[in-house]
Each structure stands twice: as structure tokens, then as C-alpha cells.
Image 1 (cartoon, one colour):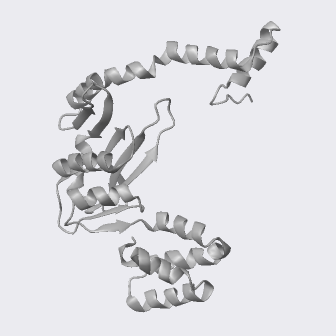
Image 2 (cartoon, one colour):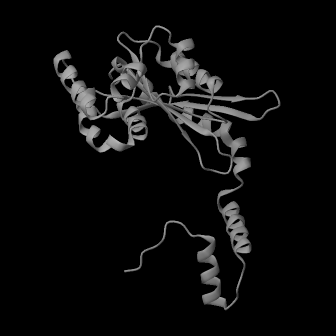
Image 3 (cartoon, helix red, strand yellow):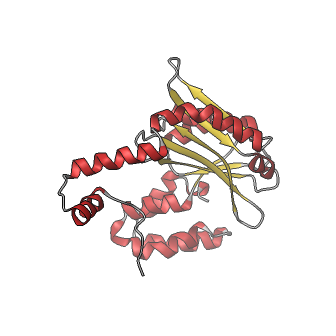
Length: 247
């Protein structure tokens, strides 16, 4: 059975040209040929930014109630783009008042970062609330993101925001959501613990997550003592971060 590769690389082009035509081409020539072919099929990535207003218009037209916003610099350059679909906006009021936010670097030609916000429904399923593409992840871009979110989703009773320990997220929520508790994701925190205490991370793994899910002070103290016995540095590390904020 022939398995088709998902990515057709410059080296694949070199190999195919050699087999089919008996001609040797350099890597750079093969790479340039691939880029030209991609541009012919998909268009120029730079030009796609010009299509965003049309895309947003159609998104709102075909999904009434959807909110989009495009923010550009004074000289007309792209800065931020935001989308919240109507289904997500409507679904928020029926979900848990927990908003999990995160950012991830993009690997396309123009880089940038995608900012996301999601929540959980009553069955624990993830519901995306909003996303934004920004030129760079910093205090301003996160604050702009939260301005849009607060304007659409508001503030609910018992609401909390969950993220990793990204400083820009904390700074932006202090401005936009000063009344809402900000918690730390246990999975992101575990990655920090794992990197910081490499020698004992295998022993700490199960105990850490049992500790994070403890629902009584007695169980919490018991597992914290177990962690202390494995590596006495972990306890003050968690206390300094604010272990009560871990979810």
C-alpha cells in the first residue's frame, strides 16, 4: 500500500526530478520552486491580510450574532484580529464560569501569536469562546484581547480565569478583571516543577496531581508531607507561587 506523505519537501522535489527527468537541481532551486507553486495555489500570505475585512463580514453574515474586530496601526499595518462565534457567546451563560486563556506562537511566514479563551460545559467538554491573532504577545495585546472578551462575555458570579504563569496575562487581567480570581493551570505548573526539580520529577508526578485535586485540608496536608519527604524544596516553591490558586 502506498502511503502519501503529508509534507512534500524540497528534498522530495530533488529526488523526483532526478528520477523522472534525470536532472540534478540544487536544494535552493527546489525550495524556490515549491514556494512559487504554493503562491500560485494559495496566493501570497501578505495579500491574505487584505482579505480579512471580507472574511469577517462573511463570518458575521453567515453566523448572525458573531463578533469580529480588526485592529490596525496608524499606518494601516495589521496588529490584532479577534473572533467570537455566536454559538460560543450564547453557550457561555450555560457553562461553568471558568475561563482558560493561553497563547501559542505561530510558525507561518509572518509569525505572530494566537491567543485563545475557552471554558467547560456541564459535562466537562471544552467550549472555545474566542481567539485572536496578534502581531506579538505582550501586555498590550493581552489587554486588547480581554477588552473584547469582557465587552462580549461580561463578568459572571463565581468566575475565575485560569492560565499558565505568563506575566502579560496576569498584568492584563489586573487591569480588566481586578475583581476576578486568577488561577494557575496545574498542568502548566507541573511542567515548571518538572523542569525545576528534574532529579525527583518521576517520584513527584502522581503525588503532585493527587495534591492538586485534594478536596480536604487533611488530604492536602498529607500529600504535601509526602512531597516534602521526596524533595524539601518543592513545598516552599509551591507556597511562593500561591498553591491555593492552582486548578
